[in-house]
Image (cartoon, rainbow, N blue to C red):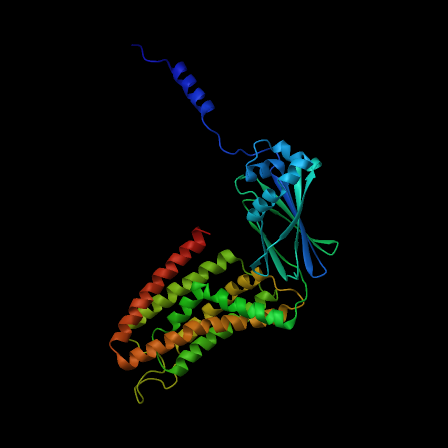
Length: 377
């Protein structure tokens, strides 16, 4: 038998491709529009989407049928449920729960507009996540925000920009500012492993209570200093520089602890009374805490900026956010301090081994975070 010719093989491949099932395809107008009005203590909004995208979302075979008002009216609840699952708007860090109102055909945009309301909403910051239809890599979502009738924010979300934050500038009550930013300070620092690991590393070698308090105090003053300057706009450093430095601080403190343990150096303030040497030696870890504390303050600034403090309440927002950070650090500071105090008093031979083990883990964790911030984000 003669082998099939190349032409027949190519023809068979093309036929197979043509007969293969096809997934959802994109269309020529991959756009959606989201508009928000903030007024009278409430939020009103519109979502406008192309009938092709809505048909994909609710599994309608012929998208053009959605341009018939009667058909859209019958499908309105299904459309609202589908868009509700795709619409992600955060108000002051909490997911918004819209109350959907209506579905209106918009012939000139080949789309449908959905109205929604969010009652009792005076957000200091809102963040829209998108784009609206993630199945299409070319999709773009236009985002507009009005305060009253004044357009105050315009943005475009696509696969290169997936979040659009906006600080509304609405004045919050003192109680709202304290509650929100104190709580955010606690939770944000507890979700920042770099800062907590660094604080723990500062305490691993033990020493007197005075020494421990001094080191943590210097760190607190340093990061509060740069947090204040950067928040007020006096100094700005990009995240791509700060985050790797903060991760390296964890590597450094772990490695420094290991070197000190290998040399058998006792922490300043822990030497026996009457031992040789200067009476008032400056603890090198005070310098480490201060220097890297400055970098950590810039990192916290980026976190605070994401929360969008209003201009009118910037000072109090900064104050209470920083207070929350210190409270969050205390969750690590006091347990580590007490643990090593017990170890040094009850098991003095075990404490150095635990410190070496923990310091090794710090080096590994810091290296991982450095790679993550430098190459994977």
